[in-house]
Image 1 (cartoon, one colour):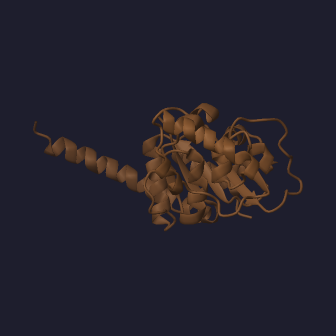
Image 2: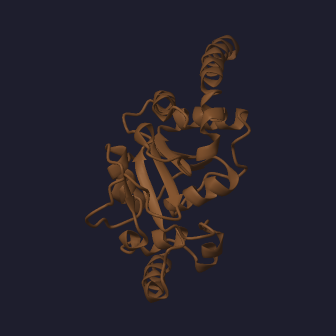
Image 3: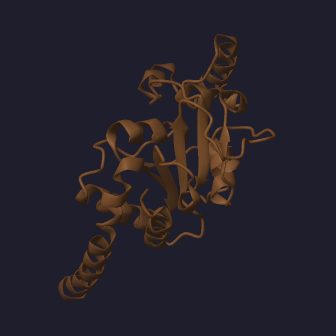
Length: 235
């Protein structure tokens, strides 16, 4: 396997964040040697918080049933749970948060997984399907530039609600950035000054290989633009 610990360090250094990048792997069966999640969380993205804080574990579809929206994006909703999704969507449309015509544009895994592994990237026990990380916009910008230089950036615009759709979007089309959503911010504790970037797992090494070039280029361009600003500003 790739050196995921080194890749984590590169991504974390680029983002300037103390929060560890999270590896997410969608599997057809429970993985051997990985602890099963025990307990209850209110949302699928709550598992991101646990993994960013150092835990490695796997969930099964039932662990996501508290979050109908996450169940939809993960394609794990059972027919019995569909009324709960309708209830949440009615709330969101009723208060003007979304319009029902937006729903078909929400990215969804084509096939629901039987198990989902969550872990800090450096400790992932299996190759990740996607890696999610957060940071301030200027740092997310540079990681997106590294993904673009690696040919691994999607053509999608900045994604919004629900945040969890960024995972299937990245797996299908390449790296994406996301503004997040209020539910995710409550459940994960990321700051109001942070955005998400989600990378496709198979693209990690290519993206990481471009980080040093992008950092150096941005340092050079910072000096260049500061000089131009000083020289050409007359007002």
